[in-house]
Image 1 (spheres, rainbow over the protein chains, first blue to last red):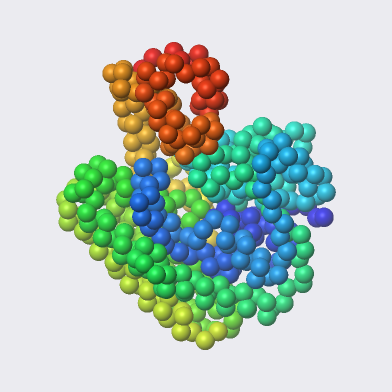
Image 2 (cartoon, chains in turn purple, brown; image 1 turned 90 degrees about the horizontal axis):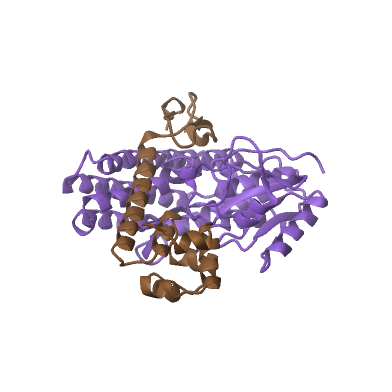
Length: 335
Length: 132
């Protein structure tokens, strides 16, 4: 097996997908392509749930889905395993490394030693690649980091068995069989990825998911100042901004990443209509950045009036309309 | 977002990494650019930490007034909710809620306290003798 090459990406799961596939000779794969084929873009405001004492909002699809869908589209066979016992989990990993296999691992970030302390919350759906072992230190390629790093066996065991929501339980995965991939397969993967993403953004029943979910959040925002008081309401807005812009999103709540995918897809499908939708997604991303700026005025304590909350909410309504138009347009394009 | 507009502000990522942003280059095509951070979201993260500090000092006050056991302080300090703490200790949530009462906490035996101590990465002694 050839030497492992680290690829830095915006998002961890895309990064693991890209690095593992490239390692198996899938040269064409890029982060936007993996994200698009995996129908990564989403919006959901989960009701009756709080995360770190703030609203539970996500701008992307559920953890694990991108890797699974992209591999399936490319007919890549994947082996995955979870463990009851942490010693078994480490022994299994060691055995795979001894065979020269690079392994994707789901981990919690709270105990991840090379992350800045400020970023270490109990978030359990982070992904990294273990690509070797030197002495008792594991060589780690974390896709959001610029360079590779290493962690001790004890540290790795701890993060692989982090507890709480989405506990990884030692979850690891790696491609076992990669065939030659045809252009037709790639095109089909793109077609399917786009179709599924249109469905997710436009057709999920209820009011909390897809483009309707964005309007749902806007309605909530209008009531937050009254209901929670300005300080708590500001923290809630801060949480939205973090989910949207923090490391791992590529900026603008993954919208720029999706726009980049559509641009790549236009070339592969030889269909310039996709470029028009790419432009619309870029506009949506820019508007998300504008709304982050508006929201920051509130949590910085500079803006405190109800009209300032209304302005945030109005921006979200506008974003929802832009994204609705983009996905309607996208769903009509014959690919 | 244009490549030239990518913010390069100071953030907690300094000395750790820079993050990948998807941006439009001069020719109007998508490209990536590394960013050191964006002040807008840095403040959001700072505010979240201020809130954690506020909750931790609230917990101290409650313990001083005899309204909560030391478990509350360590829970807040380690950013844990009941689900996370239940996961690390193997103790059911409703039992944890009971253990937050000072009277119940005082009667806990060392093997239960050890589980909390391990979850909080402190010693049983520190947990028992926590001074708010």
